[in-house]
Image (cartoon, rainbow, N blue to C red; front, side):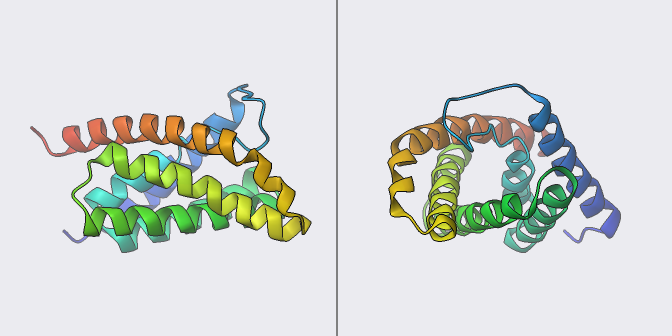
Length: 161
């Protein structure tokens, strides 16, 4: 189904609002960089509802605009590293395997954290940052599952059943 620019503008705005609302939630998981990833609901829903290309465009635009509005240049670098790897993994799993939305989202959450760790390791030129991996992988699994369940419910309601 062909979508117009107003549709994509609305979804980009929704993703930015989710990211902003998330920044207002005072949640500390004890590990730097762990977030709920509410804006990723839009990316997962778009991946299933509008396709890979639309999800990629909205994800990259959200990361860039969100970084300029609510973050800093380093947050953009880390988010792009994690977001692009996450999207690539989710696209691959969705296309090649018959996994449900929650499973694809969990893989996306885990790969997002791996991507951010790789970027962080390159930026600080120290591989010891991978000591955070177990906690980040656990957090990516939990938040990915939550995002997947919420995305599945949104997709169900969009289908009109």
